[in-house]
Amino acid sequence: MDGAEVRRIASLARLELADAEVDRFASQLTAILGYFEKLREVATEGVPPASHPPELKGPVRPDVAAPWPDPAGLVNLSRGAEGEFFRVPRVLE
Amino acid sequence: MARLPPELTRSARAIADAVRSRKVSARDVADHYLERAARHDGTVHAFLHLDPAAIRAEADAVDRRVAAGDASGALLGVPVAIKDNLCTRGVPTTCASKILADYRPPYDATVVARIRAAGGVVFGKTNLDEFAMGASTENSGYGTTRNPRDLARVPGGSSGGSAAAVAAGFAPLALGSDTGGSVRQPASLCGVVGLRPTYGLVSRYGLIAFASSLDQVGPLALNVDDTMLLMEVIGGHDPRDSTSRKVDLAPLAKAPAPTLAGLKVGVPAEYKVEGVEPEVRAAVERCEQLLVKAGARLVPLALPLTPYAIPTYYLVVTSEASSNLARFDGVRYGPRADARELSHMYGLTRAQGFGDEVKRRIMLGTFALSAGYFDAYYKKSLQVRQRILQEFTEAFTKCDFVLGPTAPTAAFPIGEKASDPVQMYLCDVFTAPAPLAGLPALSIPCGTTKGGLPIGAQLQGPACSDFRMLRVARELEKLLALDLVPCDPASAPAPTNGGASRGR
Image (cartoon, rainbow over all chains, first blue to last red; front, side, top):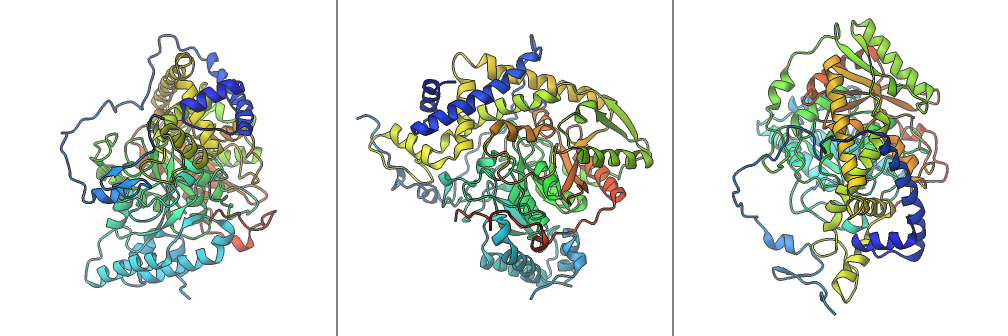
């Protein structure tokens, strides 16, 4: 993974990296991905992917709304709390 | 000076019984542990947050409750240290990350609420690798925890603060979380017991998510009996966690003790490979011999996918983490970077708030899930995960439990693996497989190296065999006859470079 690829991935992940970080991560991520290549040794043709442990396929319950006792307390955790809203910087220049 | 009788400092169950029968007050118990922490935690740094006044107030409330005639509650007056990725109402919960500096959750995690309901005293928040990503607690944003049995060494991770707190006698019980070994490996390195329960047996409501298909809350204690005590309190169905199993815990917890005679103990060839320290191997083989002497039968096993569990695990966790950690963007909680435009604010907040290992994992996961790489990395890992699951299912048709080392080595020196992520990942070789299959696993102390460092043995069992496994472990613990008491950090080998670094 080269510097350009690290920058592309960091941008997808919303991480603004410093130049020195890009170089360090490029060599570390390359080493880690190289290690992951080991998985190619395992035959997996036709094996269904397991995203979760078994026996837990989408348990459902009635969708009942329960009021939260202190909604303002939730909003006020934000540095941008304004009334019942979160203020953020502009989305478009 | 509050001093507990020695027999109480080695058993949480004995503390609860003594508070119940008013032989000792919850306040005395709290004072005893607060004094120990005050004396030694400047060096060990197990806690990120410890509020003596709040703890004394909670203990006093327990004493009033007992005085008023209500002596119910399995944890009456028992201090329980809580890993700092579990939400505690109004009390800082940072995940050892700068991005959650000063976050005070508006609610308790279900496990915390259950501890309070059982009369337990919530006793501080313990250090961890940032967002539970690591095996040494060196990745904490607020300084490394030292192993109280050798202050130059790591306590393991990510629940290193919880394991160190129990080992050093700062609290008789602690909660950790285990995604790929984060309860069991620090338990092993600190010489305490740690259980990773079956996936879904303990509620994760209020556990700050890292990798949702693997995360599980688990108890740590000095001995197996106390581990069982805490597991009985925190386990069981919770409608607030959609992955919580609808299993009635009571009959599992009350089932009769299994006898070791006739027990089939699986011993995989893959757990006796190069890379496992000879002293670790010898200590685990001693467990095998003790079990055989007690009438158990060793079943040779092949688990050939064992070496593939780490790459599988790291692809699954990084992918899930990249998604789970997207919520930390400065909008709803935590510090917010100054920027005039939204995506720039996100990027700066996250770059300033996350440490290196978290950034690495977010980027690895983003990469593995990105267009063009999804099939080769993420999907491939889920297919290998399926095969690992099948391998365990097959193994448990031949044996009751699988025995092996928890970690390939005893505690390693601080700094030894810190700059090499792949070396650090290899610590998880024996702990990563069980979470991939959703299985319970337990680490118990089984001996020490010549240098006095603890060694842990791991039992793994089929889904929902947690309490049977604990009972088998309790029998093995008796056979091992180790002296399971808190250590004295003041007489442990000294740190090589002064006191623990503290971030706050």
